[in-house]
Length: 430
Image (cartoon, rainbow, N blue to C red; front, side, top):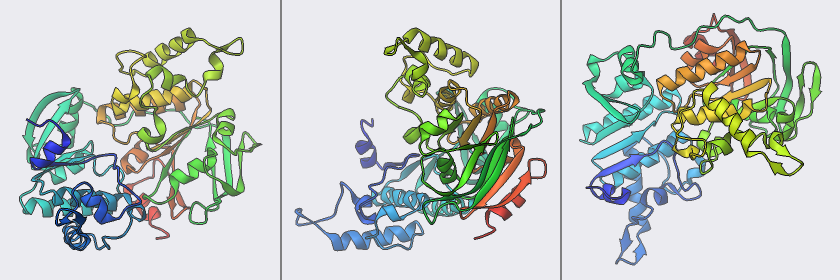
């Protein structure tokens, strides 16, 4: 009978959450032992013991770091390793890992698997939650599948294939992971020339074109400055020099409002932190970027018009929600993402920038998101899609630009793209 997270920890169960919440301005040691500091005489923190124990724990998770280093200096994968060390320090015998690889490069995933295998040898059991079927099959002994909150079954991993897992997850056979596309991109409508960030270590001298109805994929490893580039285009980050034009007309984008006014929308990488307004309703989240369209007599907000918009989008995008008044934080990741897409569609943008649009979403919902993206391109919307999943880039893009170290390292057409040539370009300047 577990009544709280603290109670679970006392019983030997720890969790590494999908959304890490480290205390970034404190040291590794302080993060590991927060709330459980070793003491002298029950009164004073025993710093010597804390640092010595932290050094030992870091070796267990293959980290060669000074325990006094602040977490703000670490990468996401390193912060994750600190969370695992924290679980080990609490003498956990069961560690739950929720989507642990969602923000990691392949090399970092390999390192994570090494840590997991090391923990298994010490008798620690791992519950590994993931939507990435190849990882599930690579690391698991047994696989449990759930659908819509219901237990479907448990199988030995060696009995399963990716296709079998997909079928059991969605409750039907998915013959294609990506929707068929037949539209041909039109004329160039958007152009970026020699765009550089005001920050020295960010993107530099970026140039590319985007066509009407095109899905332009942006590939690269974590740290390639892909998201930062899109934030620069959208007016979130400062631009040192370069130009942006739409249909031959120069755009001056100093802030997101300027981008929105010029028909550009941005679906951000971190859905929970910068995408949804978690405590607000579905209706509020859909309408919040276009409230000016629902104002009557200069000050009166038409709730009826907002409800009409929400009903239309819930139907059009197949958003599963009990009602428009439901708090968005209670919806699944896929439905949250659909709500954010519908928020931007309310402004009728011509250019949609989608940063990791299917991160943390199950395979059935992914297909629905892919279908929405393909339909928007067919309607003449131009899409820029950042993805760390190479099969997704290859399956959805007309062209793929690859970034490395803040620069464009190459371009491949969707038809010619392979994981090998994308990876080769992603490490070109490394």
